[in-house]
Length: 301
Length: 301
Image (cartoon, rainbow over all chains, first blue to last red; front, side):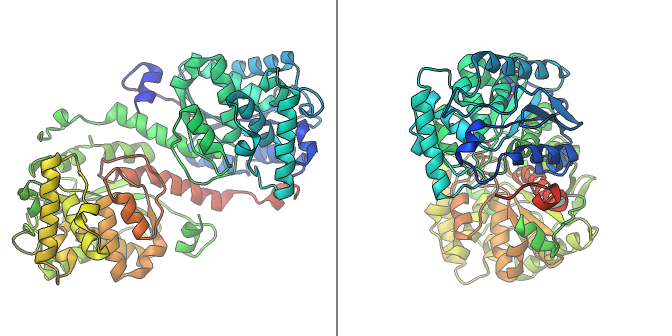
């Protein structure tokens, strides 16, 4: 509750219309057999978001949240109506062969994310961050391993449910990627368009004193990278949940943050952030409206 | 999610208008110096509920929940307008001197609670249970110790914030109460009017296949007693949170249930249940509205 008030610098915080962003992109490293699903599922799920049938649509409707779905770099000809077209390319390069993106592309993605937040009404102060991208828990684990100096074996989980052989491939891919790109910026070398864009959006949100609600493992990787660039981000960030992805809880502890929920969810799409947002709204309402003991005439001990 | 569907026996559960009940009563054992606050705070807080200034009012307004405040046995001349008058007496007797209530009074309180739930529209299927009563964590700990065979030292916490001397008095009171009323029904001998009424309401809700959202330590004590009488209650119950009250988490584990939230709250009033209810609504919305992978045209692994 203290963070909600201090983020805005006022004791009675107003949050306005909650905004949920889902950033989608494809990942070259998915071709290394690190995911339980084929690459085309990224685009299919974004179509499902556009059609209103996914979990995040249901949660946003049920809870009165605005939803913006962003094509940050899906591997398709172009997004359907209703999806914001900010594609930085048809998926990243496979980081086993080359940097995932150039430094210039990484900066472009970041700026696009900042622009999205700048365009929001100033009164909308509560922003959830989710993502979709087959292969992106591999990229996120690589970015986090590089940023936090954690061993791949510690930080790699099953994502959407890869089997033992896939898990071994995922670990091997991250080890190779870390070795290959040891000197590079982890986001450009190992990350993804959705993560870079999300990081830019988070930084902009913090600079405008909006609250950033971080969803799962991939959003946490974007946050960890963004927070190195903009340390003020921490004072405006709420971590929605510790997901079922192995190591998410460990990474949150290493980052020194405490998640609101721990429900063993592994759905992605921003669904954890969507569940946490009503709790943040409730806390803000308590700060605004609750009577003090004095005003209510309650006897002291 | 499975419980929400199975409680109603339908795959697409409809929950209707969420209903929050707060049962208030005074406790004779409060005169033994077991609370950080004087007894009159019970009535003052109920006046605050009636005036709309308490945390539970804010949460219900913010989240579109109906709130019913029930005088189950507050020690005052009578409740203000807006509070349901079902008083079973001006507080219970001090269980150090006599049974808290007679067996007949305990059954009357239970029936009154059942009646309250029977009067609700059948379509309102999501019911939160909270309470207010100075001294009631002492009564609740005594009831739970008797039901579960736990030692007072294990189960007694600081309630609203009693000091070390008060905590020692609380433990001593529970030990004496357990010894004095070893053969009696724990609810009548050691409990409270709000707990007995809440237990009746929970039982009725389960019989009508409504979902019971259990708030904190005191509501958990009412639930544990009710579940002995109506084992079907378990299949319709959601535990909102593990409160900061020492031993609440331990009691939940002993009862074999898992709380949704663990936020270190100790506010009472049903506030934990009020925070959990939007999550239950969100889960029900997911069950009703989310597209399957087949319907959304998503490729299989």
